[in-house]
Length: 453
Ligand code: HDL
Ligand code: ZN
Image (cartoon, rainbow, N blue to C red):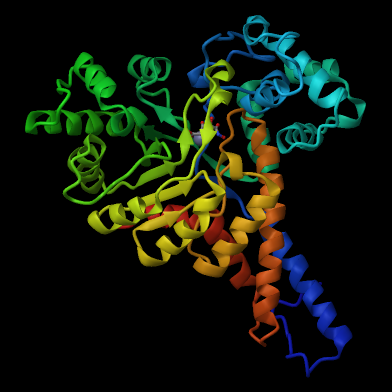
């Protein structure tokens, strides 16, 4: 039984045993609060069945170009595992193209063989498959890939979403809706209600606008928003109209852009086209729609194109540019996550300087236990309860289970230590206060920042 008010005397008060017992009570309270708090997943690449699914399970109507990925073969062919398997199979044994010519199941068999059976599945991405199977009620110890396939084949994708959200403790899934992706865009144009699933929230993602203006300008012109290679007033208006139309069509809750390590923003006089697009098109529309922009910085795309989605690399980015954006755009709100471990401390300090900057997540290559612990610990010490500790970045529905299981445990480890530190001073953390804080981390910081006036 955990006292609702933890009577933690200073070290000189209650006996050592009592103090130890009360610290133990505090730890179990913190772990339970973190385990039980539903999370609004800030960033994923997941979709409801309305976007089609290449694997229809017990339902029918598989769509080979469908965007809803789920099931064991998708779990095993996650691009993280594709990259890992090419490390252990020599090029002469399996050229990239031979792998890509395989069926999804053949690719999964190949990865299962080389990364799970012929080597222990101890990487985070391998371990994640096992955690997911276990929490779905299957036994990874059976090592029965065919049996797992048989189980998934009996599931309905729509019900699998509810099951996975329940197990993972995810209250809402935030999508990534890449408007410059033809497959995604067409689905919105063909069905205005394609995103109308209350379990999901849409995010308008538009990397080319800031990363490849010539390409973006050509596409916008093709879509009826005539803009030229340089940015004149007419082009600014057309760009703004494009954003307004797609924010309205998708009912996006925020907009997002991934930027390369070399992205720079040098201030109001910065003549770079990316800075002009940010200042003149994106920021004004997001201000008028009261919508934040998520900056995801540090991904160097396609360093090995033969790995396809797995071919991106990390690079050190410029946090000073983020600080200048926050300073120059005080009426805009910026979510920000960075990909390089070495950028994390400076980004957390930048967040101390700008109230319109909300740091979020341990993204992609820092979404690993050792770095989640290091980064979360540092963020609590610098930012207290005023950041969003994690997002899943899940690409396959069932990954929500392992990404949140693993992260909840790591976040709880940090919070146990931090609450113990304050308890040791005589400050009494109540159950209500701890649960309030955890709800801020897992839901309210995001919801409040989205809704800020
Ligand atoms: O740009 C992004 O949103 C990244 O998360 C990429 O999608 C990346 O491939 C990924 O899935 N990381 O986890
Ligand atoms: Zn992502």
